[in-house]
Amino acid sequence: MAIHDNVRIIPLTHAVIEQAAHPWPDRWEQQLGRLRWHLSTPYATALMAELFGDVIGVACGFVQGGVGRITVLGFLDEADAPVRERLTSALLDALTEQGCTSIELVAAPADVAKWEHFGFAPHETILRYTGGKFLQATRDEVIHHELEHRLGILHLDRKAFGYDRSALVMEHSYLCVVYMEGTRIRGYALSLLGEGLIVADAPDVGLELQRWHFPIQDHILLPEGNGAHEHLTKQAYRTTVEGIRMVRGAVRPLKVEMCFAWEWGAV
Image (cartoon, rainbow, N blue to C red; front, side):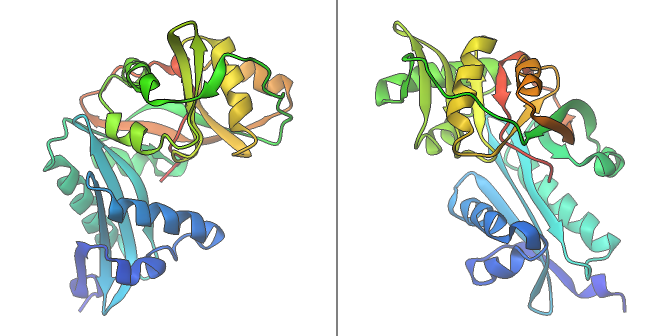
């Protein structure tokens, strides 16, 4: 009997959550926190592949505004190809059943063909910037967000991503800062959402918000073609390809020029 004949695909539970983070030994605590978030968030889904009581694979995602996003996918060596396919398909089915018209993820470059097998198509390249010297924030226009800023934040977010992500954005609004010009919000930064999220309507606004981001995170992810690239390379930031944004189903109109920090790394 093959190993995969004994594997069950079932919801992840708190009882085995520490075991579920083992596929990422170099960032175990970070992934543990991410798994806990998925278990405690009503619009998120967390599944596992279980073999004789042990977790050998975990898959997570969430749904906002009719769009599903895969955020975690990892396996131990005991998970063979059929198990990996079963767990991935189960997550896709679970997200689709929640009414998604599309599902997105960032795929490692080596995994693009694998995701194409599941019906995903490649779109933007996501770059990782590390090791440079950031400038100190100087502008008085950047302030900590208050309740009255929320509609402006959500308007910018929807303009940038093409769909409603209000629950996700507001849930991570702790330490959020906004760029206010008079009564108008021109940008915001959520450094605690994933790898960090910055949305702005112009490069000078986005760059100023990045200066609030770097003391909290030592790196930044950006879609290729964003206006911050020239400034960051001048500040000696090194770039590597984090992954490729891939979409299955309807493609929402992402505005790369408004994304000055991208929250999701490669799964």
